[in-house]
Image (cartoon, rainbow, N blue to C red; front, side, top):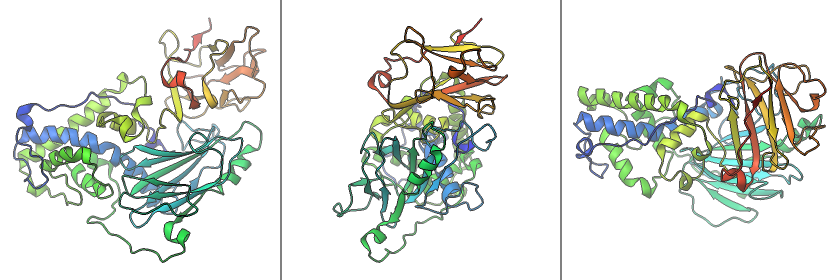
Length: 467
């Protein structure tokens, strides 16, 4: 995934509004735009936080599905873009690259009709497909953990689709939004040449419009009030975010739990399909909205150092439970994070004594006997240089290490020690994860985390400085 998908981690507390700032809010979308600057500012802060994840998601969707100049352009909606190579230190177009599970990426547009996803039988290999709606909720999964290793066809439908499960379809997966990101992950084993096996599996992932599956005529095309425009990052920094949000809301189905919230947002002109006209605001209200946007953005950025655990930032609507700040934080931390039951990533930038990791030093990670990362499928540790976050060039071409690493050696007492340093540790090369000479950090990826990790009972050991 591109650099845009890996923004800095941020954290911010839930926003609240004083009674005097919101006393004019009516629970209706038909009232006029508020004339109270204080109210407009408070609403803008809350609305910007609500819309942030949608906007960042849309930015990515536009690149993959509509921007023909983008290097990873997928060819349009409802088409796969497969990542079918092994990343090395020479690859600098992608940050924090993942060699565990090459991606199969698609942006689905369900506004005209559903789409059918076909997967082959996948034996003795982990795989998953993550379904992410426009809000960035992970609303469904299929794969090893959820549906097993059998072949099947799945119907992916938008919010207004009604019908019985068709013959030949294993499951109907319905989204709250018409735009969906489909992110497939297929395990790459450590054996030499396994990328060719991954390619063969990826070639069997198929997407087809519903009318082709049913062998019927294509339905009429549906148009919305506003054009499906490009994304301008600057629009998020001012009152122009209102127009972007109004465009995106057309691709959603209003959830009853958000009725009052959306009515509140309507007080600053946030209404699905409505054109943003700055002239309909007083200068004072427009200025207040800009200030609210800037404050929300600053608070999001300022909270970066407070975040130590990202597992609660991703999941279903029920998992997030109305916490739009956490939803925004997840989008800022890196779009499309897994639900914790599927995979957990643990990042480390400091040693046991809270000092920044540096290739000028030598470190060990000691996993006591029976205390390696609790994974149903597998785990790995991948090291990246800083600040670039690329893989590290090294003489043995090893970029990660884990339970699938051939020749990994355990201590006589059953402990597993990983050696992290720039130069090879004499006699310990089997357990060596090469580091750069400069600053670095690493990610522990755990696929199919067991309950001890999900609950927080298992803690990752911190790297120890070797003196």
